Length: 88
Image (tube, rainbow, N blue to C red; front, side, top):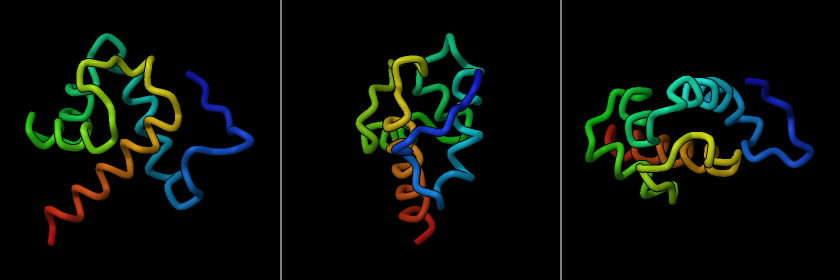
């Protein structure tokens, strides 16, 4: 898997650090669905993972290959939003 910088990046410069490891990890689970990727990547329960994916507008049954850069950026933002809401 190669990551190439887009002329109009989906992730902001501040999001680039967290963005970089998520995409290759997701593709490491290539045969798995995004629900499992999110649960395993962030050690979440099924309900929490479902909430993150719903917030990002991503179907839990999707495979990583159908999620574009914008989808992964939305996923990171949704995870950050739910993580900060849980810690408050």
